[in-house]
Image (cartoon, rainbow, N blue to C red):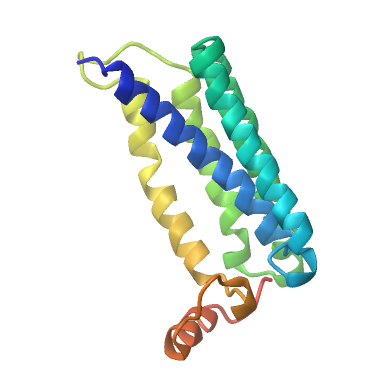
Length: 181
């Protein structure tokens, strides 16, 4: 069954927003741009990311709907994000010798292997399982693993846009013994 034009485009735009949000968040976390001293840099970085997304969507809607361009844009943005998290993982693992610090690098490796299903497309096996459906299946566990990892990252209270109850903030910050900030 084929998508409708609207649902197909929303799928592409949502995927692009998700990949770009990963790139937006990585340097904030890795280089601690959430600190008040970096507020101006953070605003500039956010503006750059929003502008890049708007230009991308406008190109696809207004100039040319180009599957190859869209895929290439997402692969480039995702690859930069992967390089950043691999850098963070290697840097922290060598310093802390904690398996927890290796998680981002391991998740990146898993996602690169899963991405090969999307990039090296093949016809459906038995008329049902194609590369795209297997790619979606292969991204379930790393998505859950990534969420578990990110949920354990202690953020200073000034980095949050709202105030957490003290019991919840204590629970979030104490789940990891070594602050990898």
